[in-house]
Image (cartoon, rainbow, N blue to C red):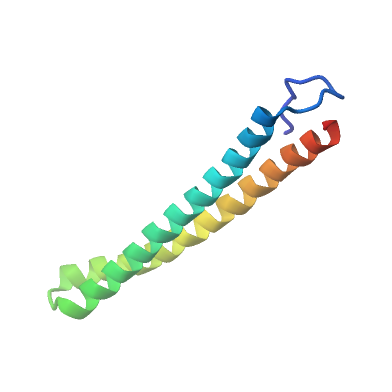
Length: 98
C-alpha cells in the first residue's frame, strides 16, 4: 500500500528531506547488521554449548540455538530486502519531484 506524500507533486525536495531519506537507508542497514550479529551469536553459543557441555539440557539448548540463529539471520535479511524496496520506492518517487 503506497503512503500518501505530504508534499504536492512537483514540489522540489530540499536538503533536509534528502538527508532524511539517506538516514532512513542507513538505519535499515544498521538493523540488518544487528539481526546478523545476533544470529551469529546464537549460532556460536549453540555450537559452544554442544561442544563444551555433556549434560543433556545444555546440548538440547545448543541444538535449539543453531537453527534459531539461522532463522533470525534469514528473517533479518528478508526484512531488510522488504524495507529496502519500500525505501527505494519512496526515493524514486521523491526523485521524480526533484
